[in-house]
Length: 232
Image (cartoon, rainbow, N blue to C red; front, side):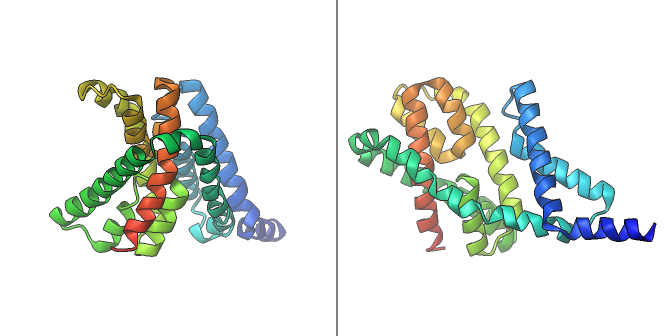
């Protein structure tokens, strides 16, 4: 019995525990998303929820999970650079509409950051949580690094990014109709800037141009948010 306990303790402290738990939880999230076909059932959101529930029920220390989770985090930086490829694929479209795209992303990024700071100060939210929420509208790898550099909580930032993306995917078709946005480029830039990859998945459904511009805006808005955060 003692040997079994020692074996389990060794396994839980191994990096493989956090890695396998993350992959299993995310796999279940992908399966649920395919079954229900709803942006609310987001694989990342489902995966995070399952990990939290599992660790809470089993009383396994978070430090054990983070041993493997930190290894997964190492891949976030390389994943961020992949965004450059999506921009490169649409380089012709970006050259043609370079100024409108950049201005749209700049305005959107500034409004996103300013609204978070303004609302947090209005409701007297502590500075650490404010820093955590500032990069909510950019893709996860960039958001985590911005949050960390500002002194926020990257793990909470991930949850904020997921919620923002889900709301964007759900509301963007409605808002486009309400505000009568006819230009597909404007629609794509707005979606990509405000709700990153999750919103882009919906933009692709709206049209090819919307999807392409939204994909470009993810990278541009991410870069601009990093630059803006340097002055905060």
